[in-house]
Image 1 (tube, rainbow, N blue to C red):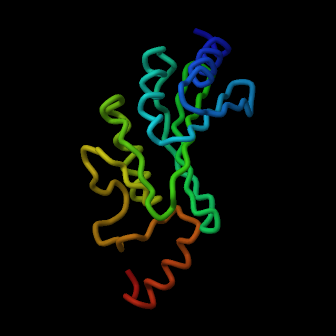
Image 2: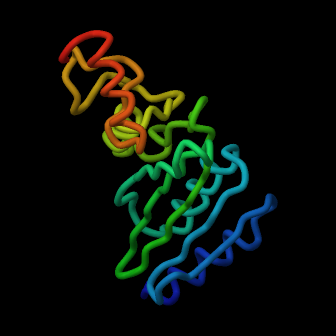
Image 3: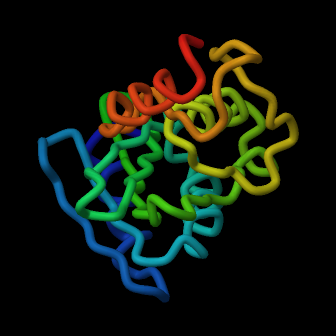
Length: 162
């Protein structure tokens, strides 16, 4: 399957989806699919896997800022030169996504990183232990959130250096 075919199949899956999605092609070899409901994530991933549209290359987080009240989680699937990204927004205060480990076991490392760096709870994650941060890292301090500096400063004042 070439890049063009993979992107077309991905677009068909997203646009024929029962629930609302939005698609965008920011570059010739990319397709971004914005899911409007977190409940659509696992079924959409299963649909991509059934059509053999690549492997899970990464899961990334994006802090949209405290004023937005949201984080965005992106799931990047690659096949040949094609990149299909599933995007879903979650609340900063109660950030939670379902684990993909039942569908893609190798998702565990990405999900653990997302959890500890952005504070996104991954429900159903087989091993929720920290991956990178030390065991004595303060709770509720997430290094890749934009407000990390403010949280770190207030924690240092309260607890001393960590």
